[in-house]
Image (tube, rainbow, N blue to C red; front, top):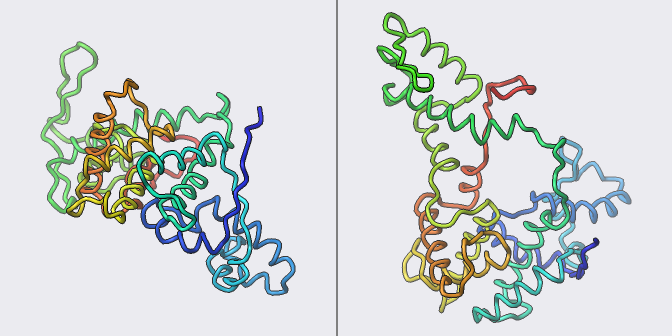
Length: 331
């Protein structure tokens, strides 16, 4: 069934005005695939008419959005972009959210505009993409990133925890103990660390981390125990971005840097809940406080660990080994 859409017209002038906040707090800029698409559609029409088309193409043959925008700022500012936002979801959701939390809505209100842009760009694929079929899924990759790689990280940490601080000198253990099921452990490597050396070569190829510190950071950031509410990357973008938008509102900001108020936690939890970006075990209204508290704890944890949304996204991305040149297998 085709979804009913409301077509909203945003000028390029509006986007350029909001871009600094979208980039800094939500990790959205002109390199976002949807922005590229919007810029590209307009650029292709204009550039096809120009004899200097090659000036605005990069080495991959794609339009250089930044160069084109700078060269055609006045034309772009007058041009309208067409963006689709679901009438039954994001437009009304953001309006209702701002009204409930007493965030004033005007044409120049950047909180409203930034959130609306963020929804259009970050959530658009949620509306337009279909679920993958079973045949489309790469089960070996899914198994690798969810089950096998975290095991490899633990093996690497155990294997190298005696290495020197600079991790350049490997100090293998004097022996290893391997157990299978309920059987008694088998002692190996008592004479020479042949097994540890073989395991090291395997992890070098299929894991590809360079130090215990790197392995520990990945294990914690991606596979570690969640502090506060469990969220995907888009939820984290909205949590991080909305918090920094609230920091510019006098009656919503926290008194000290990198601290999160209970009010901010409740407002952000309300938005994430409306966008279906986090799941709550229960929906009773008396748990509203707890929902906000979970978000407050999560956000405070991210603020203490990271300096930017880009750092968070990079840390949260599933990884494969850069040393594995065999694209047909992951382990």
